[in-house]
Length: 157
Image 1 (cartoon, rainbow, N blue to C red):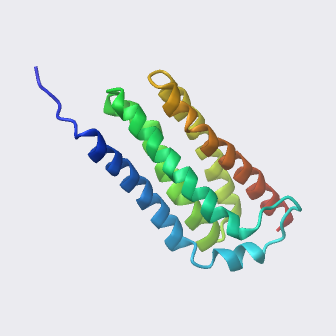
Image 2 (spheres, helix red, strand yellow; image 1 turned 45 degrees about the vertical axis):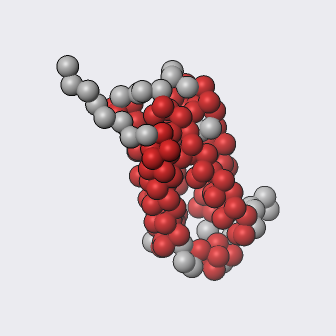
């Protein structure tokens, strides 16, 4: 029988934070002109101010990392992290699509897929950790809001 070596919990948590930080960095690099782009778009009256996105995403990224770590602590096999990993990739892709490429419709399609992946992640995580699943819910709620905002921007622009 082969023993799988797992890193110590604090080191694993640092790994989850690092993975999420990479996603945040990709978004940050692609969004250097995001304030100008965002303010230049026709927006619905309920659109939040651009300064709100940074603080919200900071909290969400910490929750995403903590969620992954809590799920990892259950001893879940790697294959059960597929939805989580797909969500990180899709999250990293949205900002370059929307802000750098100005591909608002493609970004909308992509964020709808991300919504489904986050919901699936929460369902998979719930099988082993209610806390890990619950930490995905603010992320899902904000991403659904962002989907509505992306939809409005596509319609208005």
